[in-house]
Every structure is written in structure tokens, then in C-alpha cells.
Image 1 (tube, helix red, strand yellow):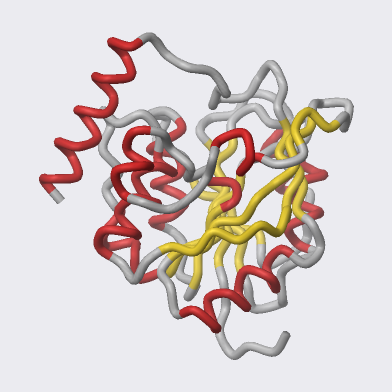
Image 2 (cartoon, one colour):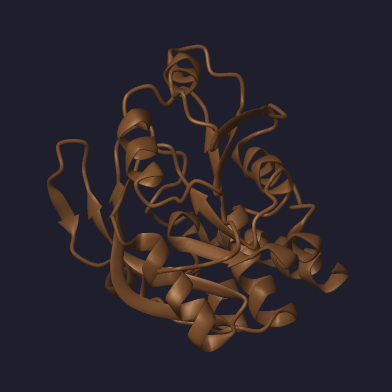
Length: 234
């Protein structure tokens, strides 16, 4: 696929030495020479930074994280991105070789603000836990739907760089950054497109920040109220 613009990948890292090399390798296979991988590291004390610095590749750039948790670490990575489109990336997944090409084709055909694709969920031994994240989450667009039950999983998302001015800053008192970005892209952007292509292997293990389980009713209602309040302020 020929293009005359560059893209950014925003990755947030923290003590990710176990899986980060495999993830970076899979990302770089997707990128052209003009693209960039911005890695915001939130103070890793393992070998994460050593692994990142071992890449003699001008596309890879490390920025110092704010040490304020995963939401603000992603916000910092996004803030430092300059590409026409911004892909979000966790530190422990594996991208398929055609991920970027498939997603950019949708942007060019649909003129939307955000594209989100499906994924296969694996464990740390590469065993498939779920063959479709969309299926287990009943993923689809809709502002109210995604405030009540979030379909936006950041590691499968890419959005227009111009959305930075809308999604930043990311509020501290909402649950996660990806729901915030997805809902605002629907509400304030040119819409979101869900595609069924499974373009990453989404790794679940004991050290994941996000969890695939339900909170108590009280916490769920509190999270939704906080989200609505912050969105109305926008």
C-alpha cells in the first residue's frame, strides 16, 4: 500500500521485559521508514528500557512517562505522536503482519475518525482463550452502548491524529483511556468503524493492567457517572 503520510504508534510500558521484544518486532514489520513508534515508559525497573534501547532504529523513540498510572502514560505517548493516524499498543501483544495496511484501507474508504478491529485472545503460552474479542464483548458502536458496556479496546484501535485535541487531556477519574477515546470519536469526530479482521494476538496473563471481569454494581455505576460527567464537560 503506497502512502505519502506517516503514522504513529503510541505504546505505554512499565516492567514489560517478558513480552516487549516480540511486540516491538511485530510492530516494526508493519511500519515504513517514515513512521514512528513512541514509547512512554513509566519508570520500569526491569530490563524493559534496555530492550527498547537495543533497537538501532530511528523509528523507535522513548519518552519519559508521568508515573501517574496507565491512563496518563498512554496520554503522554499520544501527546508525543505526530502522525496522521495514531495506533495504540500495549507492551505484550503481537501484531499481525497486515494490521496497519488493513486499518488504513478502512480510513481511506470510509473517511471515519476511528477504526477498531477484532482480535484473538491468547495466554502467555500462546494458547487461544477466545477466538474473538468482539464476540465475548458484543462489540459494536454506539455512545450509550459503550458508556454502559465498553467495546473499545485500546490495543485494537487507531484514530485520526487530529483527535488529539479532543481526547486530551484524559481525565484521571474515568476507568480507562480507550473507552474515553472511542466514545469521543463517535460523539465529536466523524464516527467509528468496527471491522471483523483479527489483527493482533491479545495476550492475557497475571500481569495485565486491564481485567476481563465485572466490578461490583456500586463501582460500575460510579464509573459510568464519572465518565458521563467528564464527557458532558467536554
